[in-house]
Amino acid sequence: MPRIIFWSPEISMTGNTHAILAVTTLMGINHKAKSLLMQGYFNSRKIETSFTPYDELKSSGVFENSDIGIGALTKIVVSNKLTPSTIKNYAKPVLKDRLDVLYGINSSEKEQYNLMAHNLQFITRKSAEIYDLVFVDLPKQDTEEYVKDVLIDSEVIICTINQDAIKLSEFFETIQKSDMLKGKSVIYVIGDYESKSKYNIRNIKSKYAIKDPIFAVPHNYAFIDACNDGSIIDFFYKNINAERNDYNGEFIYEVSKIVEKIIEESKIKDY
Image (cartoon, rainbow, N blue to C red; front, side, top):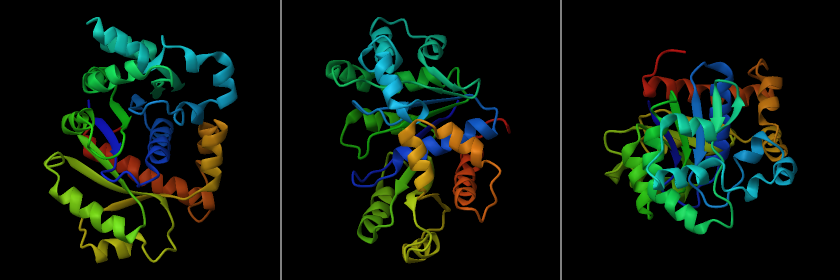
């Protein structure tokens, strides 16, 4: 099944992780597709702690436990015993039968992280055998070989951008020249979006002659607070029926457009 990669060729672009958190959570709430969320960073806890409070995870010892998450899977890969069902066993369900999260590598496992990076492409392939959609928050740029491998091997690439005139020019030039993205379904998403900016979606499309749709994850302090508090699911359930002209309703409306575009580009069964 399709692998959906959130990535940017420019290291200074922000909002990648918040975008993938918003999209996967809303996907899980509104659709029946079974999704897996993972990330390819070293010692990043933003994904895990958006679903469960940091203090709760820390006190549970999960950050020091190398027998869970993608770290444990790496050991199984090395032993040649990785199966799709094994991946599901090591993932944490956050929305029952809809969304699982694969915890990342902790700060004491640099060697294990290197092994994970080397095998990430294989792990995503195996994950796609059991999940309808596999979402990966991938490190920016393509200087690392494993980043290139995962991009080349995936079906849908979400390219995150910001409202920065200089970076936008460089971004579109880089994307258009990228051999890795040729033949891929590429979706442009502006992270931390401000609609009142001079560089809104309409003006960006006009200035850079972009014919493809550009989507947005609006700046939303309530959503960011929810990520920091480990209550992202509560945020969506609380605001899922908010009117579009409501502050949180507008956020959910824009994210839902990305969700529907991913379903369309992934060509999965209409859920």
